[in-house]
Image (cartoon, rainbow, N blue to C red; front, side):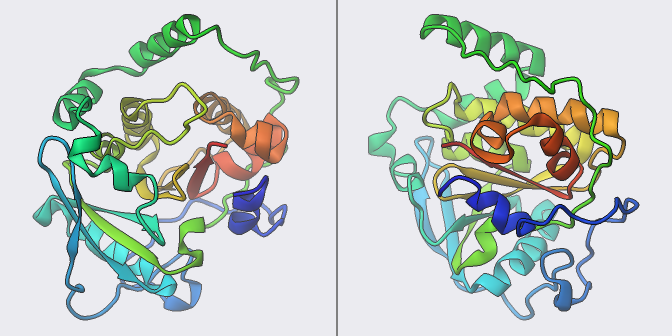
Amino acid sequence: MTRMTWWSRLFGGRQGSTTRPAAAPPGPTASRAARPASPTPTSGAAPTTHVLGVTPSGVEVRGFHAPAADLLPWWHRLRADHATTGLWPVLLGPDLGDLAAALTPETRGDYDDAAQVRRATAMTLGELQALRVERAARYGGAEDDDLDDADDEPDVVRRHPPRFSVTAEDGLVALVPAAHGWQVPVVLGWEGGVNHDLEPVDHGVVLRDWHERFGAELVALSDGQVLEVLVHRPPTTPGEALAVAREQYDYCPDLVDQGVGDLQTLAREHAGAEAWSFWWD
């Protein structure tokens, strides 16, 4: 994915309109006409699933292909069933990509997904931050991530409706046995930023924190290095948005360095949106 492609897919190069008030999360009976914001569940029984792979601990991951227009409706329908099924839906894009290796136990003999889920559950955000500092020191030191506009609040916070780049084409809907959506990257052994100091547990801890504070729920792990979440309670004030933008930059520097160019734009256009998209180059 080239520079800014993910941003163009989400916002179409728009600067957006004025901030709109918070609204309830899209319900299962919303109109299909506004599919990116308010999907309509697909009617009828779910398609027959097939095995996509097995994790090192023996967790079977199943899924099915769906047309682009049906991906988000399927996600909402299956998400609503999670309390009953224990299966968290996640959109993967047109194929498994790098997850094909992760879901082949013979190639991931050094990864214990069950142990890593327990580790992510017990780890605090502060412990993760300390761990990342330790990693950076061990592997040659952290890059200078100081930003000129780190203290500049945005003039407004745009409440963009949820849009996901993964729904641009037909793709896979995976059903992952997980108690919570934030556990999915850990169960799958999804590392994401191959050029960054990230491990699957990092994604789990960060997503758990954002779920507790903002109602963030994992929707997609696509293109090998793209992670997208639906956000039910995004920040609404400039100060809150700037604080969240700092967190997002710490988690995914490419949002600014290979994307919007400055933290203030990230706070204005991304932090207050109803979907957050992360891409590691």
